[in-house]
Image (cartoon, rainbow, N blue to C red; front, side, top):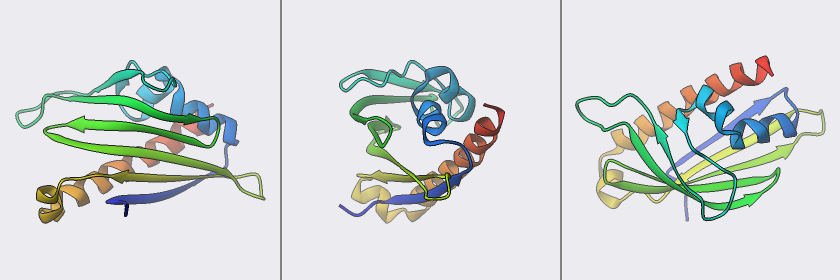
Length: 138
């Protein structure tokens, strides 16, 4: 399945530090939103952001795959849309960490409104920038 949103990030931090930022609830809250995440397949959790007039601020998720420290995947359901988020982490030969992000499964209706997917891409790019700042503090 072709990804609807696909992004690549590179960090100077170790693969272990990046994995921790992806899987530690407190660290996740610093670069995505408050959550009750646990890296356990089948665990249902929520990301909680500030609600606004268009959105209740809640993303319902379920962990689909955990292959430490290489793959983390979970569902991402919010505002009537249900997608899958997958993070793939690889150690670079120069000691850097390469993080690949995919979000798949947007509905045909959403795909017809390309702006929604572009908005998701923009949001994930912003979160990736925030992740880089969080990693620099570790």
